[in-house]
Length: 270
Image (cartoon, rainbow, N blue to C red; front, side, top):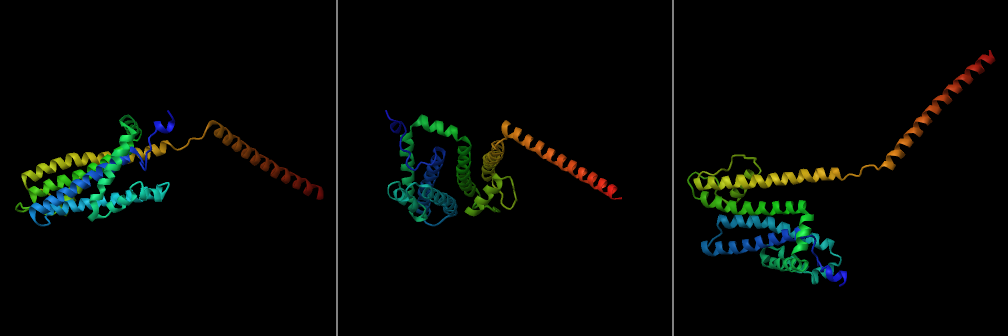
């Protein structure tokens, strides 16, 4: 069997962890499309829950725009990517009103990952564990912000004295809580809202701590990977330093010889 048969065509697969991240984001976007349509149908108007989902979808759309630009700029053949690799559908899926086209991203990612096979996918995931952790934190951060925000809005929106009454309030409260900043301008006043707040504190702080650990590990890894001088380079450096020292000593001796000759010349003239 040839090597090409053993290695399936990866298409425009950029990386297993990256494709799984885009797959998860696409599924979340499609789920949001269904949730938004259901809320609009049941409630008959644009509720605050609908607006919260819409605001999360803005972040998801930004991810899709970045993904399209990344795939387009790195494609070996841009024309082939747009016509045969689904680039045209990737571009359409960046339009908020055409989110349904994001289902093609799901189909493509699943098809290529299935070609690679489970064992190979697992090996590649383990080989890119740092990047996989970052993608996982980003996805779950958006997921938690959305659904914890929806739960918080459910309990707080119509409560007396509540200050979390809009989708924007819920997202702001969730982000501030997850980052442990705690400005105190938004806080739950109901029992249910406080229970949801405990969940947000526990999960959100864990995600933010993981993200901070990833950044610290990235900086330390980059520092450890800096090339160290080899033994031959160290010997060459030491030799050059000895040569510079000898040159300095010779220069000093030459200056002393010149001074002595000048003194003898003055003595002879007198």
